[in-house]
Image 1 (cartoon, rainbow, N blue to C red):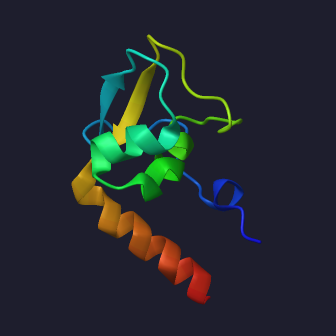
Image 2: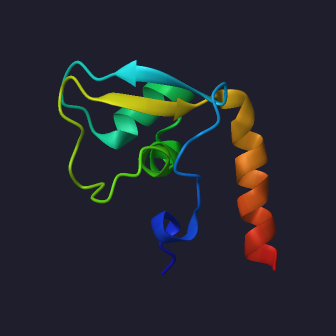
Length: 87
């Protein structure tokens, strides 16, 4: 099995302009947040990684502010992952 959360490295401080912030107003699963922001449930792991979440089985509490990597950067990130897997 492949644990993407231990295999993806994002810097501790994301570069300003590469993300925006959202505030969670109710308990939501990571997949729902991913769908709302990226129109796919499959990028939940990117939100978890960008926010340094250790336990993704726990959903963010209402009032939590999350960093969301901008959509236009997603292809670059996914291509980088693909390249790492091919090495």
